[in-house]
Image (cartoon, rainbow, N blue to C red):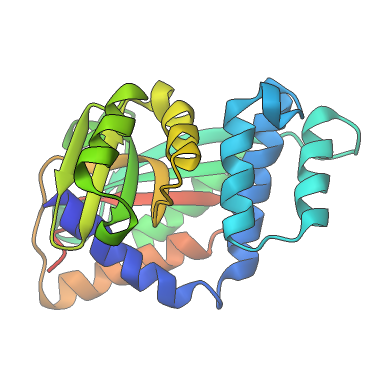
Length: 240
């Protein structure tokens, strides 16, 4: 069910790409800066940076933006210091949410996320409160016409994947987070282009919502997504 839900959300996301391109660039820039800061600015020596550069190019991010993000991470250009944080909470109807932020001010980010939950009938919870509803894993979605299943399985397993799920929409490949960059590079070398790739919190159980609760949860998602610091939002609501 988690795989089906992710494909459905991906279709919705594709329709919003143009409207939110600036936000997408901002998110990728922050990730590139952090990757360059921790692993250096040479993609050949920094697998995480290499993977992010692929994502940036797929999003048609301008080369100047990419170059500036790398130089901020390596200290060649002045820039703020970003940190990652993860917030957990419950939304309308008791849906579990994990909100990943990259911020230069954790107090500001926490206050903004808490306010979004409160405004839309949810509440922020402590660390570990909802994490047990999710599997933390690398996740790649690949259309069926992009690779034969046997070939994909062979490439994925050799690169550290531990699960391949076949759905009507396509294939979902999962791996432990430390194997994400290796698997991303292996797929690229094999000429297999994912429709989506990320280190995700994948729901192990789902919760159906209807009516006002479903509408309130959608508003919460929209409000969180509009926050500059928010990078990713994961929830366990069931998607038709």
